[in-house]
Length: 199
Image 1 (cartoon, rainbow, N blue to C red):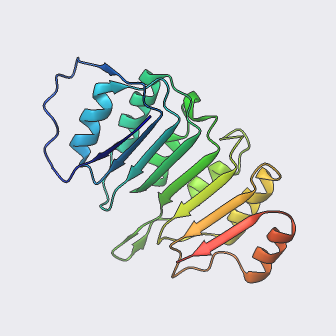
Image 2 (cartoon, rainbow, N blue to C red):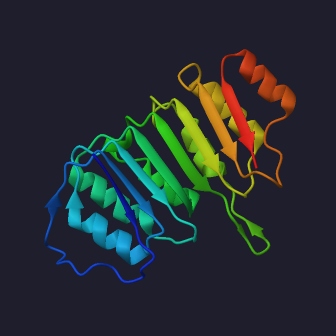
């Protein structure tokens, strides 16, 4: 069973913070929801059977990590798929990857590294953390979404540390910054890694 919450409303639902709903859902997708809405909904439910959690949002916002961590800790679920398709700071992404219930994730889709005026927020902390085999040791599909900066040599080091477990890497939205050379992509493909780059 899955639940998709899609709200263009800025006002969160009126629920008592001490009330909890125990839900049997296996997947939750939150689309176009305000911070207050997400905070209220995730503070209202527990989902012990949750395997897939998706955050899809068009506008930048901060402070999501503590809400996610508290929700997952309370639910005591085991995630296998996590999509953070929101422009979070790398530190927030890393915080969400720390709880024990996230350790079994095999599919990770993250958005990080956004351009803010003349400043580029780099994705390097996320890539550096993912280079450690103790972080998401069973990861099989990794997808990055961003318009920010990416260091190709760091990506190659991260890939090397995760082979042969990681068979698929997707990088989306890197229009301004070169990521991997065609020769590097070809060499990775020959080694059995499927690499997809798109704008």
